[in-house]
Length: 171
Image 1 (cartoon, rainbow, N blue to C red):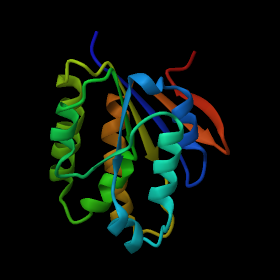
Image 2 (cartoon, one colour):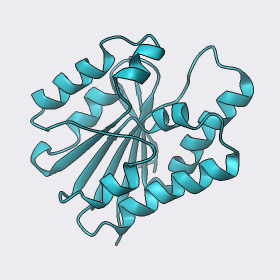
Image 3 (tube, rainbow, N blue to C red):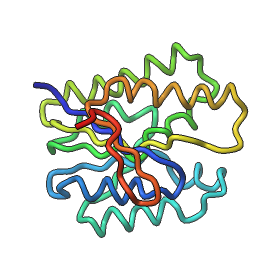
């Protein structure tokens, strides 16, 4: 059957992460958080990483951090049936100087790694749908990351103000 790819997406503070924790079984999940304290400091998002780590531990999952360089290798090491990747769109922050071709290649390498891992049956990806105050050509590169993910998704769920809305497939 293959790996099921589920995308939970929405705006800043929409409740994406909270909803994603509601649809997984913690004992069956490995969470990879994208980013780190340096990125958080540069983007003036103080406390965000720690808050997400506490939320992850409270859900019964040990948080692990990954980067754009190490994510494929990190995925290969996963032994549990569910991967929770928080947050997919953060990869954009590390690749905004890349060409569209390089972004496509790396995004597909990441998704292919999930599908190649015989232990992973389900990938749940948290994604940001909009980043305000961004020049258009940078926004297009961020959107490309999501476009590639959304094309491979079996299910898309948008979260607005904590309310999930199933976008695809429609029931």
